[in-house]
Image (tube, rainbow, N blue to C red; front, side, top):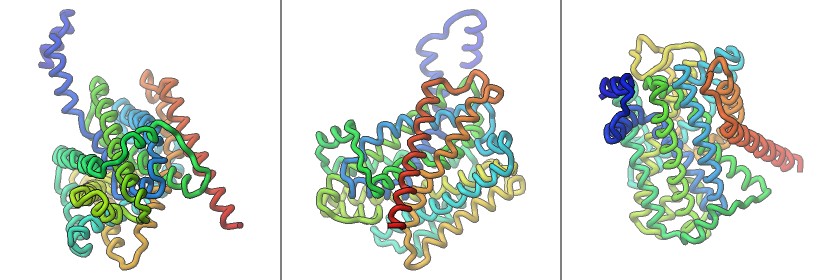
Length: 429
């Protein structure tokens, strides 16, 4: 088919419309993966907990944020995918090459600490979801840790990606659960298009958490590394961009249904929850057994999915940042640091969850807020890099993308500063 298309171009003939359509579908299926997987895994245990708490505590008041968040997420993810395709290098690689090892070291340390917290949250989600079905944590967590370790260490990139894509499809459980909760759709839609804001630390912290869990720093590193490892070429980029856009829209549709479901049931009933497990259990008498079971199953799928991706993303960007070999298709002898780091994060995350009386919900929420605080710094590096003419050439950002990305950065800095000032004021007071 490619030979026929090339021959047509050489002779000035236009390919037949039907042939072009099928060729585009084939190319999209070939490059599909990094965008959809990265965006969907963002709805992890910490994210589901954050959305559940947002709906349970504030009702529909935070639904409006999902529209600008989706727009910002598309722009940010597109920038990373484009840099990966054009440069053939990961984001950590580009930061080290352009800004030096010292800057890279501190960026990597900060992200590593945040991602360890995120990984603990994922295994906590595995434990919490299966406890609803009667499986104790000391059984579920070791089995889950061993499964995700074997998947990446023994698998190839192509096999791992296919399994991740299948896991992405199961997020439909949250859409069904949200429908079964029977939210008042008129109120929900009005809240979605009507911005509201409350000038109190709790609301602002939750707002930062929602943004931080939807546009997480690790995502940018993983997406760019995945695009590079997949070997997407510049002429395939339009299809890769579609992969990113579809993933971003789907992930925020899932977030929408989680918030709407918890608002219509838990918030309306005035029930206080602290975890996503609490949300699933609270849904049972309010929205029915099937809604609760689907919510719990979605939590398990999301937690196990993210427990595979987050340590993988961390291993990618730390190894890239320090110039070490990385990649799922690399053998152990070729990328020892990559596999040791991946194994260590999984082991630590699983063991911490099994510590009795550990405040796991605090770790979850703090990790999401830390993501929100770190995000502006990562966005600044990305925007400086994508606008370098020597690096990106004609693939540099346009004015619209720059305006949205810089606007997201400024808003996140302003919200973070407000939260810090409010926290200091409360301590002094």
